[in-house]
Image (cartoon, rainbow, N blue to C red):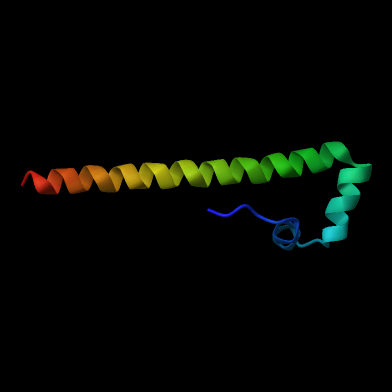
Length: 66
């Protein structure tokens, strides 16, 4: 899973990249909350991927014993 660039984040939020930089400079609390949201989403996706991989591994192990 690749890390999102500021351009990717701005596109996702439907804003200009300059808006992100302005938030960082002039509204640091808002910028921090937005960045936490992206980090949370990335962590959630990573955990889901790990769970799905584990599920597939368990299914493979069960099939080997049949």
